Image (cartoon, rainbow, N blue to C red; front, side, top):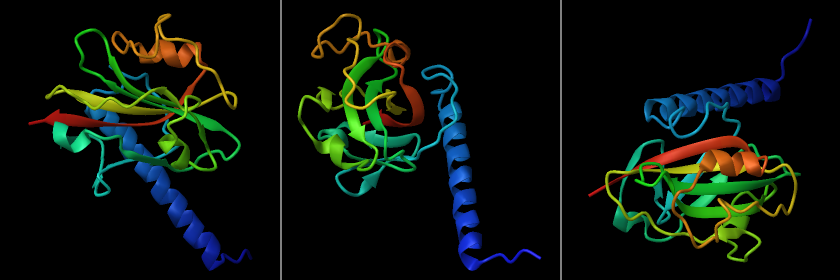
Length: 190
């Protein structure tokens, strides 16, 4: 007879709750038209937490005002591979010229999934944070696992990092061999 320890039982409950949370995340991305209209269908393996002004933590589809998002948020993500690095991309999914890139942070250390995002050095800040500036738009945060550490990203449409319009998130991910592991979006309102 196999004896189930309280630790094993607690671990199973936490693991089950995490899987349900990821399932809910995927469904909310579908309900909000993010999957498959903006991002290809994927299986989330990480929970992305975006918090503005210490107290405003986003859930999928959170309504925000432009004043609430003037400064870069605190970012943290779960279930990271401690040996890997990640890339975070924020973009306007409803911009008239494809997508408008607002923020790209690269080479985020999986062992410190919040610390590297705040690092303003060029090795991390491919595109410095630009606050959302159009109401009635969806702004998406997408988290990707990189295939290698300290990866130099291929330019986007041969453009300079300061040129943010006509961003193609799918091409960026493909060109840099990035694997989408999580996403969340917010709605800008008055």
